[in-house]
Structure formats: structure tokens, C-alpha cells
Length: 366
Image (cartoon, rainbow, N blue to C red; front, side):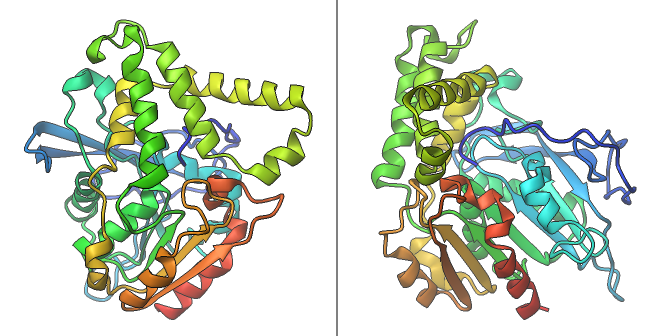
């Protein structure tokens, strides 16, 4: 998601117990009714594409299900789901996602699959500017985030090949980076809500305006603030709210001026209460080098790519999907029609809209 996750998850007790992943820490209580494990993986002397380094880069992750090994002892059932800007892996425990996918007989049945939900660099419980480095935290990019994911899977969890890599929004873009950078690593890719092109046009504009709004706040103090630059964060969060909005759904839910104004203000206020300015700037800026377009032919894994027609960030009028699928080895694209039930850019997290696409992808990549 573009907006930070603020939905409350059910605090029901776990109904089962999964086998801990390799190098797992003591399990923590699950954040939903699903039986989860959480752990940290530390990458020593991580080198960023910018030339900057961190002596220790921590990647936090959540898992469901258990690793299965083939006759050669290799894990063959691992699925990684990648979150968007401002999100965490735990957003994929929300009912609209998890309750459609992880249960018995569902596409990602956790009795069958080993689900890995990382917090990417700069997000959640992974290493991020607000841990202490502030503006001195490396200017990471999507390439850095994918490299860290690869290290987690290979060095941390001992996985040599993924059954599926899927992602939403920023995670969608990561799926395309995966396809080009590690073309033989995943048996299937499912990008949801993005375009495989350079972040430019209106997409780059609103991101940069949000960054500029924070930096223009006198309380920003060059990133060395003692209290959050609230005015700048409010302006940035307002842009994010509009970019992630669903016009038909919002009109149906808030048909009066007072209701609309109250909801927008409540959402922005709730959002900035959990934001750190340095974290948000780095997260929004991390897309600056993303551009898989020149090398789409390198993507050989089967791809099921899904966007939604009411997505402000990835508008339906762009012709990139029709051109891109012709350049990849085995790719399909579908545009979810706009209805009063779709959620704009956030449609990607409502699995009811694309469960059939996932089922078909898994079936054709057996």
C-alpha cells in the first residue's frame, strides 16, 4: 500500500503452530487469527548501490506454514509476498487478504505453502532511518531492497528457488526487478498494481511534492528534528491519501460534504500519528532509480500481472501493459474494472479481485 497500514487486525488466538523457519527467533504472539512466526535476519556489511554501507542491516520477517523439502532436500514451497511503500509484511494478515488465500483449499493454503512476509529496508521492524541514523541512513533503492530480500531467502532461509514471488504497489515493482535480476529464482511472479517503467510523470510528481512538503517545514531542520515536522507530514499524508483514493467507493461511503471532510481529516490525522519524516522521505525517494523497461526480455518466469482501472497511481489510460506483455517470455495482464467496491490503488490488497488470476498462475506453473 502507499498509505501506511492502519487497519486493525483481529486479536484472536492462533489455531495452529507452524514449524519455525531457519534461524528463527522465539515466536511472538500472532497479530491475527493466523499462526505466525517472526524473526530477524542480519546482513553484515551490506553495500548499497549508492556506495554507502551499513555494518549490520536487519531484515524483519513474518512467516506462515512450514518449509517442504523435495527428494534432494531443497525447499520447494516458498512464497514471498512484498508490501508497498509505508507498509509492512503484517499487512498481508488483514482479513481481506489472508482470509481469501491462506485457509484450507485456498490458493496459498498454509498447510501446503511456506509464506514469507518481509518488512523491507526502511519499513516496519527492519533497519530504517528512525532507528537512530536519521538523515544519515543510506539512500536505498528498489535494487537494494531486492538484494536484501535475496539475502534473506538464500542465506537466511536456505531457499534456492521460490515457488512464487508476488507483491503489491512497491512490492509489485520489486517483482519486476526480481524477474530481471534473478530470472531463474522464482517459478512464477505476480505483480499487483504497478507499471514496469521509470517512475516519472504524475507518479514521480506527487512523490516529490510530498518530499518537498516535509523539507519545507521549518521544523524539518535538515532531518535533525527533535519533534516531527507535523505541518510537512500533514501535507505529505494528504497527497498520499488522494493518490491512494477510490473515487466511486469514497463517493458511495461519504456522499455528503461533512462526511467526506471528516473522513479525510481523520485518515490523515491517524496516518501522521505513526509517521517519521526521515522514514517517509527515504521510502518515497527509493523509487527514483526504478526502470525495468529496457530489460523486460530478461524476465523468463511466468507472470500474472494485475492492475485496477480506478488506480490514480497507475492509470488505465497508459499503454505500457499491452506493450510490456509482448516483450516478456510468458506474461498475462488483466485490468480489474472499476466498481463501487474496488478500492483505487488499494484494490491490490482485496484478494477477492484477483484470486482467480493467482489460482491460474499456480496451476500453469506446476
